Image (cartoon, rainbow, N blue to C red; front, side, top):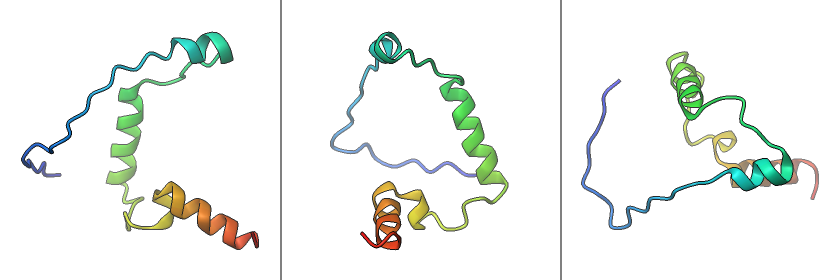
Length: 73
């Protein structure tokens, strides 16, 4: 795998996320870390699970629109 470096974008936002409220209100606790999730994505990529990055299943809005169309809505 090769990393590609590009010039910075005009809008380089950075957010500090606090998930305390979701834990307090909903009782949600993550079962895995960000590192775990990244490793899962890397391993799936290495296994060749994503042959077409433009396929609708990888894009929420397109995927949901396709599901609605298939259901006749």
